Length: 131
Image (cartoon, rainbow, N blue to C red; front, top):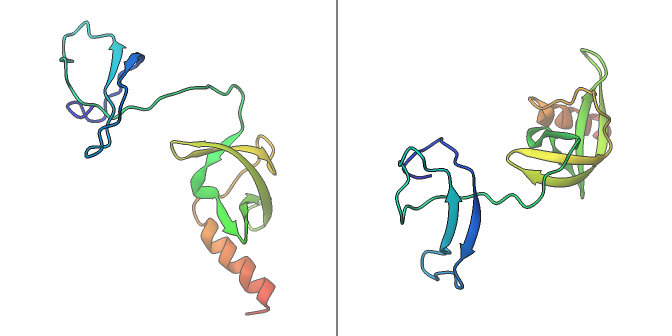
């Protein structure tokens, strides 16, 4: 909500406008929200996020762990303090800085997020025979 930055309000869409406004690229929506404290006023604008499905027991990682290698997405798993293994990933849904993992990782494995680009660079140097 623009008037209340950082706050989240949960509600249900009860009506959508029939046309997107060309200039502002907005769509009128009526959303029922608990307003027992009276802070929300008719006609207020908000950036909204619509949840259409909720995944239960999904394996997710930070998208900061992802690196592109040709047409694949990879991540590095820490085997110990000094050894890492590249994994080719099968990705699912992405949302809010997280990505669903459909294949390539197992629950409980430690995935590198900070410094994964450096690992990728070192890996490429090794493949190219550079020192």
